[in-house]
Length: 502
Image (cartoon, rainbow, N blue to C red; front, top):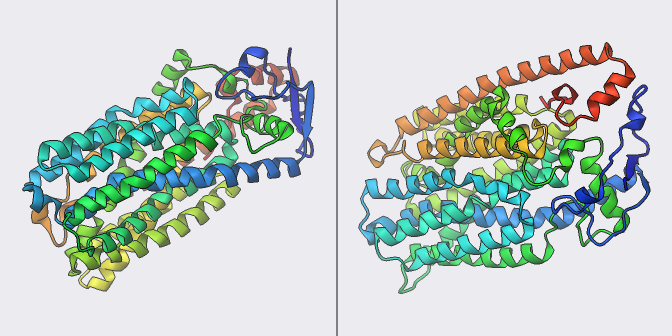
């Protein structure tokens, strides 16, 4: 049995576009990542742009706040070790600078090695998987508040890294299951830019916690208190998060059908079950996959550095430890606002690379100012430039990577490599701010500036290359007959079908 679904009010293309419809059989209808749950398979569905907007709005309202809550919990737990250290963790545990650096490095090594967990969404319902990892890393995080030595702390950090690797990174694949690629960028940016809000809240929260008069050290309270919202988030995910388009409890039967068709129409390869090893391997050998992975390595080096070391950098500018916690919040808030605005513009323009390049340049310049500017106000302004640069560019990189995969298997493989190289960049970023380089941190700030300048150059090259590929495809399509185009577009493995997001 087959179903044909198409949209009303969309631009018609000569000869072929009216036949670009979605067809799926009974097997694919049962696929956990794409099936319609609890609804009969319609014989034929047409939808209007107004219906599409209504479905998108309902999905945004019901899904994005929950996932943003997940991101805020995740980043708070991942980066609060910097605030805890400022509040006296190393002094109380007797940690040396090398041991503290090892805590950071061990986390990112395990995190990088566990990025394969992204692919679990192809086999386990997203709400079940995300509930499990969320509760597990929350428990491990809370345990940091009762540790008394280096061994206990590094054990907790390793467990947090292992479980968290299956959470936030997997959302990059989850969004591609819910939204068409032209809508992916804004949603992913709203989600990932919440890392900036999380760091802002973490700074404000830490500012308050370290002033609590208690028999429990402030840094221990920080770990325990910031772990609590994670358990609430896990429960909400289990009960409210849909496992795919067409499986939304907050949509009626017709709206679920439209949600399904919006993602899969004209994309037969998107309906594959599980993972296709051939497509995965093909995704891993594509030059584009490696180019965007290297860009992400550069961006993550700077992204991680500001997340972990910002309070220390501010403290060494002359602020007290408590004041440094509070002064870290404004740059993150500004960064979030700019990131969301640019993501909206990026989706409207259907381009990613130019924004990665521009904000890589801005962030790199900010790091230079932080390191070499003579006055404290100028250096603090540089912090704003860095925050805006990295928190705007980083989400664009994810969207660029996910948008330019030809199938879920290729996308999954590309995102795993992309995430692994990103975590390698995080490892580098966590080892280039030794305490003895304070207060200017010339080594760390210069390396981060260079990494962002390199991401700017590589993004420009990638934009030029993909634009040329699209132009050559348009020329080739103009020379094909309508029958050849129909045959070509019915083949999910034919790369000549693909129009790249530049």
